[in-house]
Length: 308
Image 1 (cartoon, rainbow, N blue to C red):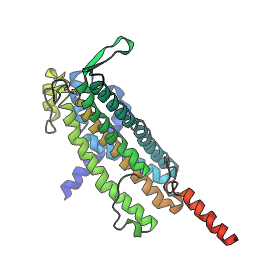
Image 2: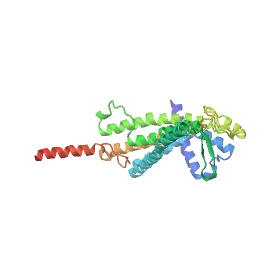
Image 3: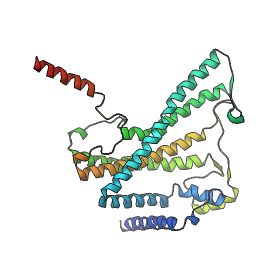
Image 4: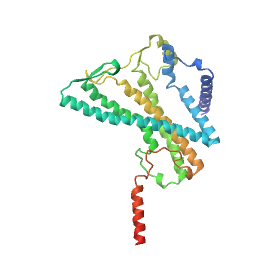
């Protein structure tokens, strides 16, 4: 037990030292343009050191925010703003997906075209129709990966309520904080860990693995070169599946950040009380807005009946 506590304290202090060192000496940051710097980025991106840097920054932000609520509300608004902005932009992929599917079917069935050539600004891009047909999966993955945090902010995820509605306001906020710390953050952290190396195994050679130490990666550095995956499931099909790996990492990062923002929001609402519920939240449509006209009409009807 004592060893575990000492290990935790050592890494927490190491995270603070790493943050201070990176801020004090930007020249020491690894250069991904060189093989030696690239392998350091690959290793650091899913390392214990990086994890404790994130934990230390989160704890420092929380400590300052408990002292100055305005600062923490600014952090919450910034995190939710990122989730909303990315999600609203990515949601347009649904329209692109529908239009592209209609065009592919029309060209294939009506005009009997076998390929499409796109050439803006003198750049010629020619692919078989099956390539564009399989590319539709990328739009679907974009919506799922990049709109998940946005949907979280908007309250659109399916939620099974067993005890939540029966709890008081502050107990709900405690449950929200518990869920963020013990479910959202660990789950998205594990997705990031496996997704990070899954991504890099399809971008560079020699292959890298989560079990590789920094020393092992540095020994591989002279042999490292870019080798982006361009293998499709069919000869003329979509061949940019490395983009799905990027989306997986982006999903984990956005959801981890939003989980942290949800924890901060719940903490602030717990401390400030019910009057702070949904404070500064940027809803596309606030819960209950859709029912407002009907409620108003119902109220008018009741008033009219009483008047009569």
